Length: 550
Image (cartoon, rainbow, N blue to C red; front, side):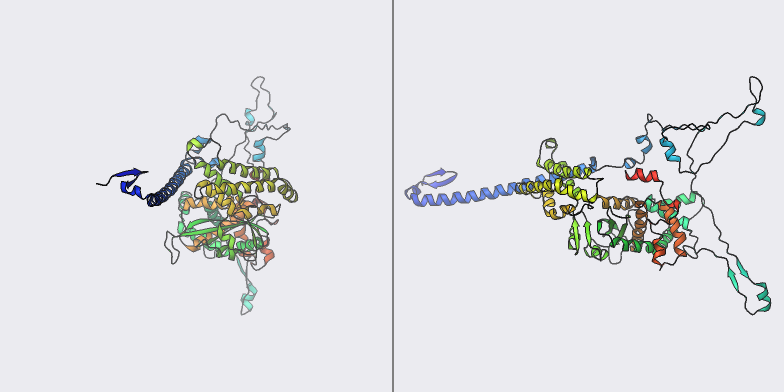
């Protein structure tokens, strides 16, 4: 029987002790093999731990997005639409004071209420004593009007529907009827209709579009609303009116705005998904896209939407053909394939990445100093500089950025490179680092021109109305409907950006476009949202412009 003993877990026969060199060599070989297996297991364990950590981060991030509060500011109107009155009502809130009496006693500072009401038409209802009642109860003398006391209220007149008959008188010459073979027929001048042979008027088409694309009210709800007003108008009819007016009439304005857009040298771009049910050759579940292009802070604002079936780079390349300048985006790779364009990155997206990294941390680590909070702090310092430069000239903004932002960016870059070496790339924090490094040249481009912005929030704000509307109507039936929606949204959002009332502006367009020479660019330019020839009723009150921009 051969005796054996153990050496570090390896069983060695006793007779092998005589050949020590051979034994040592074998032991070393087996030890190396064991070490290799241990290293492989440790590596696999590390990978599994990293994967588990990533899944935990994604779970926490998903829970936060679903149930937590957003770090972005949320409009209070959208907190709870059902219980809106109960949620935002405050019995302690006092109405602003205004004192109005007939002997013209004026307050030194006009009240807030007066400012709100000054642009509204006034209906006066007077309450007087009858002549036989104007008797003093003490001495039976005659009363005289000493003063008045005024109570002001806001009166709302709901939408009304009526039929307008356009009666065109036709004239003929009685003398010619008697003496000549032919008789001249003269018609009184009558404006051309928006849709010949249709009941559609400029007002109702503008109303339907305003309700759907400004107030996000689907056509089926408008159908119900109009029915309550006494008119049975199917959603199919309304849809036909919308599409047949969008193209050709609004497309004339859209195409002219497109030409103006390409003449600018600073643009913003973004895109979002859209479901089109009846796209030829594609299933109903296939994603389509609504692209957005808009101007920067220079010149009258222009906002244009374009429907496309894919998210390929060929679409912005074709739409922006002829454009040379700066294009600010969120870092989507399709824009990087465009030529003759300087891309400008979005620091809001970079900051959001670090915010998500913090949200993905376990609860026990969220209040502790971590690397992700350092990255977020760098971003916040950049935005703090921009807030300081909000109201300065473009030249001063350019100089101050080089003085303050450039050194901070250099420091941030060194920090990012260091963190990359010691951070798992697939972790949420690692993804934030990778995004910044991959986009670094674009993220630094805002230093090139004082007119450029640090983020692409301007485009994100402009695409939000479409996103909100999409939540109400969910999908578009046909490509034609999607293209029509793009045109209408473009005109409405550009009107809003130029401080116009969408309904009033479209009403005016639908009255004018059928009656102007659409081949005359000067005539079309007089209809653009920034034209100084637009009627006064198309514009927003000045105080509303100030409050909305602040």
